[in-house]
Image 1 (tube, helix red, strand yellow):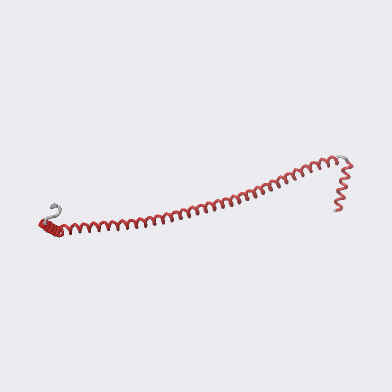
Image 2 (cartoon, rainbow, N blue to C red):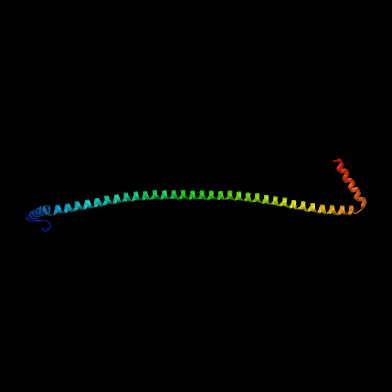
Length: 164
């Protein structure tokens, strides 16, 4: 049991050695160790602050990116709507222009048909008049070939002249 109970001299020697060790460590080692720990703590704290700032910056950039994307989408939609409006406008103008051209062509065709009709009627009238004259001439020649018929015709013309 002697091993479990320390000797008082040994105990005092160990206590003095421990106190000397504490003084030496306090003088030479604690300050550098504490300053190293403090420096390490500050480095970690500044790294955490930098990470937090980077996170905030990243969130701000993401918000800006979302805003830019929203603006780009809105601009794209606006451009597409404007393009559709222009296309519809051009289509409507083309329909109107086609309608006008078609109406003009129909009007011109009707006028041409009317002119052709008048020309054909004039030609028919001319031919009918020529045929009528020819028939009348033949009839009159036949009638005038007889002497009595000639005298009767002359008398009739004279009566008509006197009455007028």
